[in-house]
Image 1 (cartoon, rainbow, N blue to C red):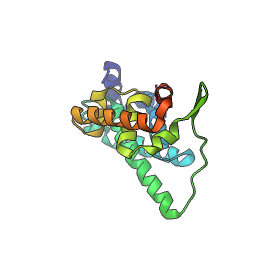
Image 2 (image 1 turned 180 degrees about the vertical axis):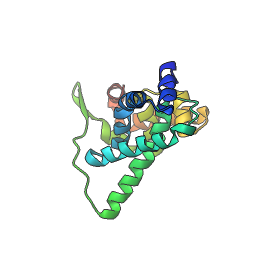
Image 3 (image 1 turned 90 degrees about the vertical axis):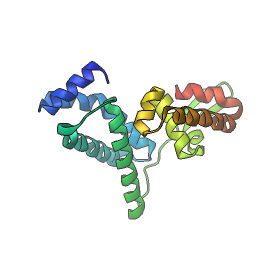
Image 4 (image 1 turned 180 degrees about the horizontal axis):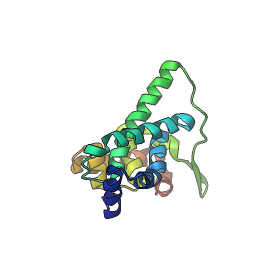
Length: 178
């Protein structure tokens, strides 16, 4: 955690609304992207955002952060998004249509979302955290509560599976994620 983030958390813990607002705006897009990764969009994603920061407000007085705040927010947002998705299935609602993200690469058109959807959830999560959120391996380990060796192994396996699925477009797919 950076010194600036640590100071903001401490000020927010002591009731400084401006500090909490700064933390909110620094992490808002990250939480919304996390919700989107789990298929939660629009107003439902805003609900996930609200639930995530409400959780933070409740936990601030006793919160002891060893890692970056985004590590905690990722876990809370992920769980809230999964719960929201579960509720949508139970209500038998349809998701909003989402255009797949694509990038032209020579003659090949790379559909990153479809490539990621072909990976199992454990491998997809590692790829997204490493390349889309640009987290360090140690931070991913803290976020997911896994040993660093497990994260490295899963990342290696995820890249191998991505290479198999992307075929000759593997490097173009990697460029899309970075």
